[in-house]
Length: 192
Image (cartoon, rainbow, N blue to C red):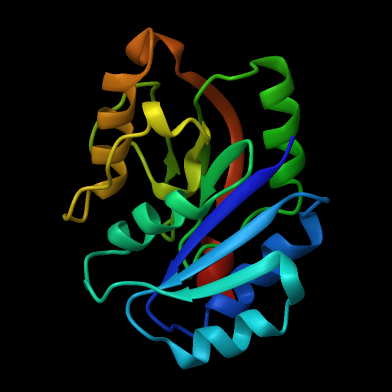
């Protein structure tokens, strides 16, 4: 099972810390697709340090919370499952192992994991698709383009993506697997 991890970037120096949290967990066939909000020379340079498993490309200039960059990255992804990580998120050390194990238990199902935000709040609190209960680094969906929705052009683009995807997915929201495992702890991003 291969993973495609899509990382939008606006050129923040924290991108290196994000990639350092991902790269040791990668297995053969996995890929990290970093998409710039327009040309991001610093991000391109950082990505080059990680070798061929991390690909950088200039995305469209949008200043739209990384949503258009995620959408662009999805069109290039070749992994069996899609994951998303912002350029200032930090994956926990066993995040990709957790994803692989969960995908083997619920093959072909979209999954939402937990996430700790910068203030220490654990998302999701309750298994409900709603604003304030969802964040980008929680989302793991099978790479089935015919069932994937769109990231909106607003701050809540992650919610737009999940809702529009589940509207296309056979079985809708009932197929969503809520996993009580933390994939990213963004308090680490702040502390570093």
